[in-house]
Image (cartoon, rainbow, N blue to C red; front, top):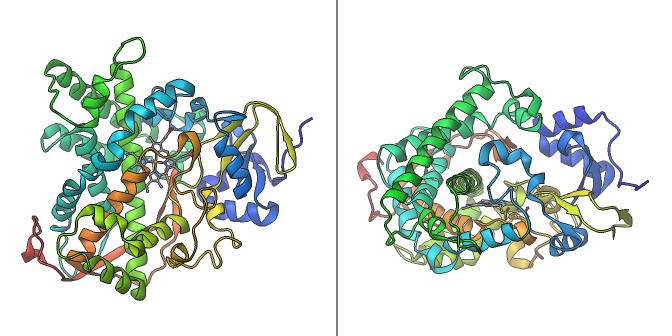
Length: 460
Ligand code: HEM
């Protein structure tokens, strides 16, 4: 019988509950006891999965994840209730590769940078409602910004009833699904009882139906009134044809849109919230960062912001210390392989453990210290630093998320003086299937530059 790497003997269900309630303490404990290649019972129906945080093993798995290993979409069932069966995340093989190629261009290069002004405008609008001197939790605003950015970029939706309904329904559905209780329902399909909108699962299903309806209405309207001049991603997907010349079905379009909306906004909002925390928490870092951003003048070109070395180091360190995606998607052995001294048979499931890799003492001395300098002193390999995963399923929105993060943060920090509202410790916690911070409360204490956008100076 195949020998798996070591793992805890604690009952599987108990480990699963620990993982759901406090994934960070669970991973810390496992790595302390079993190193950087261990087995956990966190797969479908509590099946064993190997967590990998050894860079050599990660390199092996992620560079060969279309050969000896693969990255099958049907192992991502956890996401299915949220995104559907036709989502990029749920499909595999050639179909997955083609769909990625189709969806990638708007999230890269010049097309991505064209969103710079839109992101600045949305940020200015949102921060114009921040009032002076009153503490508030910053996450809600970050979520509003990232959701608006993705709604406008993906759907090309502007103000209007449908846009507003989608914004509020998506926010409340994702809030509801973020609690450990709701996550338990994602892990244990048998517990998904729909007792109407007052029950947790019923409420989720109810909101999802309303969201689906809005998305299908938008698709129908675009079919009825095609406008080839539109450059948004929905138009791009609608004009694509497969090798048989067939367009995407409504269900496929719906699932891809949901994927981009869900994968693309909470993650970035979390990263920006953490960055605001660290920058305000550490005055030396803040001073250095502001000096660099200010050196670009009053309305910096987003492309120039994107290239600032210290700013880049601060954003990289933010995504290192508490990575939003704690794990990669599963990779599955296809043909017998030897890895880390173990003979692994086809069907063995492995997941890159991003958090533990980012906390290795040998790569990141004092891993719990927020220290952007480490990114200026050393270049890390893609298997030592992988906040966006790697290989055939590397995050589609990697460049876009980093770009958005920088434009939003530069807009905020060049316009406003902020301080943390209190000294309460901020910790990483589970939020749905990703991680986030406990509330980061801030206070606006003053204004810096005269904004050119819609910021209402009277509120500050
Ligand atoms: C800071 C923000 C983000 C983080 C930390 C993040 C992280 C990740 C990670 C770890 C993966 C799994 C990669 C793997 O298995 O190797 C992933 C996949 C994915 N991400 Fe992101 N992501 C972020 C933002 C975004 C944005 C803005 C979008 C879309 C606009 C997006 C869309 C996706 C999609 C579609 C996939 C699945 C790719 C596939 O299956 O081929 N993400 N992301």
